Amino acid sequence: MRNSILVSLSIIITLTGCGTATTTTDTATSDRVFTAVSESVVSESVETATSISLAELDLSVMAPRCAIPGDVEESVPGGEIDWSGNTVRSTGTGVLDIGNANTAQARLMAERAAVVVAQRNLLETVQGIRVDSETRVENFMTDYDVIYTRVEGIVRNARQVGPARYDSVAGIVEVELEMDIHSPQGISGALSSVLGNPETSTVSMSPQTREFLSQYSALVFDGSQAGLQPSMYPRIYDANGNLLLDTRNYAAYLGSGGQTAMQFISDLDQILSQPAFAQSPLVLQVRQITGQFGTDIVLGEADSDKLDWLKEGLPFLMGAGRFLLNVLL
Image (tube, rainbow, N blue to C red; front, side, top):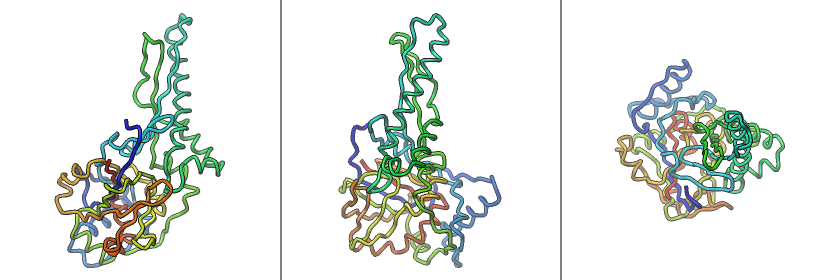
């Protein structure tokens, strides 16, 4: 657990999975979309640009997780935001009624009390999540009653981590709850109505995107000297302040497979040492950070010119589960 986070950010857009590749046969659509995307991305022999609707991108077909849960963890009032694990966690404690002769009943009542406290703490923790460079979840909850109601709902349905822990000496019961940051049943799902709708038009892989994918194993935004903070939806700007990419525009797709679509790590070397990254990545230095919370990237002029393909190329990478958001402590 870390009391504070002063982080630098790396975004890795990978061509291959982290570890052993997996295959899914859940539906014909999944197979078709995965094949269309992965063959276009990985194979250098593809001569014809693949056209596909963004609505068809199936983010349930994802690469294995690279990030280690707990690696990038931020303590906030009420609990912890585990950016690497894509989860928010809080604990609650209930006191055993020593006057109750029915031990089982006393434990059950204490456990229920612990769950209520954990839910209250989890709600407080969730409010501290940085959505983007200017907004926390608490801002949306204040401005939109529907968001408050949805967040309360997912907190009430938060999953319990392991069994309740009983301390017979202290006479207490402790319960830990967690919920996802990016998932339809998580924070991104609760915020979906105010995040806007992404484009659903048909896009084609540009020659620039294909050329990049044939040359590099990853695209790395190295913010190790900039103190960049993690957020759900960071933005990337060029040297002149022009917006190159706003990941919030892809909120619906991140929410579909965000548990692997965005990943945070603290050790870039650990990731790049994996076989999947045997091919050299393209590493771009973050010139400075911007935004109220310091979550947005500003690139230098030379690096900005290298990314005019990114907005068109990102949907394919996300559809294949190759978009990873990495943080260096």
